Amino acid sequence: MRKIVFFDIDGTLLDEKKQLPDKTRESIKKLRESGVYVAIATGRAPFMFENLRKELGINSYVSLNGQYVVFENEIVYFNPLDREELKKLLSESRERNHPLVYIDDKTMKGTVSDNRFIAESLATVQVPHPEKDETYFLRNDILQALLFCNEKSEAPYYDIFNKFHFVRWHPYSVDVLPKGGSKAEGIRQMINRLGFKMEDVYAFGDGLNDMEMLREAGTGVAMGNAHESVKKVADFVTKKVSENGVWHGLKEIGLI
Image (tube, rainbow, N blue to C red; front, side):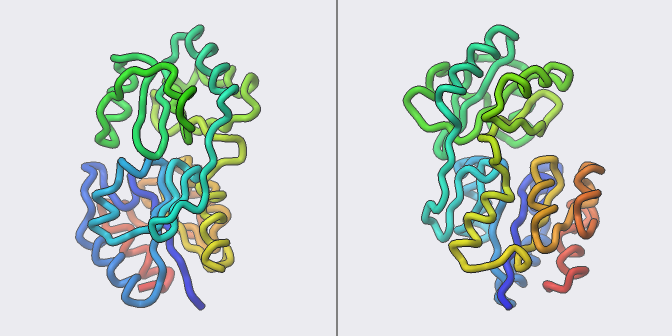
């Protein structure tokens, strides 16, 4: 039976220094040699991990938390945010002094030109502060937005925006996705194309945006550095990424 493994990037493939451990690189090679299909499932946009894809020879990925899915360099799923709802979100966030960043498959734009929350959170994924273009969403399909506020300030948005799904990924920032959007849904879109079933799917992750895919995959593996809530929904918890967690996890579940 053919199998497919989806890997998150930050905190899963890449360590805290944004480096790819040698054992992880070796793991990917062994998987491919044994006939296991390898793909990426990330909150990042495609332009943020192009070099990693090239390094690992991976041409299939679920990006932007499931809203932009590519199989062998061909787009198979594209799920943008509702433009009218984005207008409301811009108005609401202005009132509360919470900046936004709009992301599509090629670039990102901000509603402000300089903000500490934006700069510090994006620095954790080695992305610079985007240029300001407050109305970028009116001319382009936005696949994910970032709302910058602390945890105490995010709750009112849940009541106002029932067409959006909010997932915190940083103390300063929340992902804004279409309702029902997730890595799990992106994975479903890809495996339908491949003819796989969910029981053929293995998924590795560490963040809150990985919970749906770890829960719904045939086998969900949480990294040792994962949030405790993520570990609770996984079938197996491996070692930390810095302790060659991907390698150990694949060995434990019998894929290498």
